[in-house]
Image 1 (cartoon, rainbow, N blue to C red):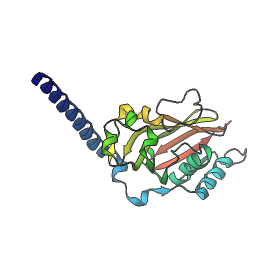
Image 2 (image 1 turned 90 degrees about the vertical axis):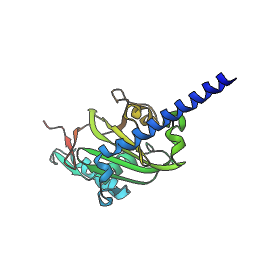
Image 3 (image 1 turned 45 degrees about the vertical axis):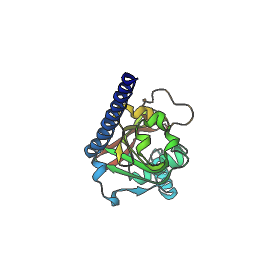
Image 4 (image 1 turned 60 degrees about the vertical axis):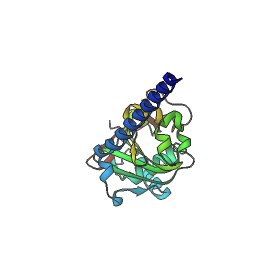
Length: 215
């Protein structure tokens, strides 16, 4: 009996150590991200007018006499991607959605019901630490896979005040995917339909630029 109790006690201690290690890892990792120290003014709310402006800029690239590239703000790009091109990619409960371009990454954050992200099956011990509804922040780059298909390549995730372990990011990203996933999309990528004439998307020094194919 006492041996059983000792074994149960050891198991409880081991679980506590694992949970503490997860919590420590999640707390220290965010300091590595420049988004953690970005000012509130850096973030832009997603709006339909911004989505429309981005769409007009992208469509202008399709004209033979049009520009060869377009510089867009984080709010314009994210509004176009998440409110128009891939509408429904974010969880249904998502609100207070905003975006920012910081360094060489674009960040999207929203307030969501965390059970829509898979609950404890995906979030592990973090599910017991976080609120039922909390902020989610995705950070990464965007690239063109082939004509007509791009992706938002998620490289970091933050849930509330905690960082999500990088090795599990693909598992969480797959909770955001809707419908079929085009061939070539990475495990941590969110598909983005694009016009066939878009050849490249670059994020550098706080600026996002979209290029078209040139003869």
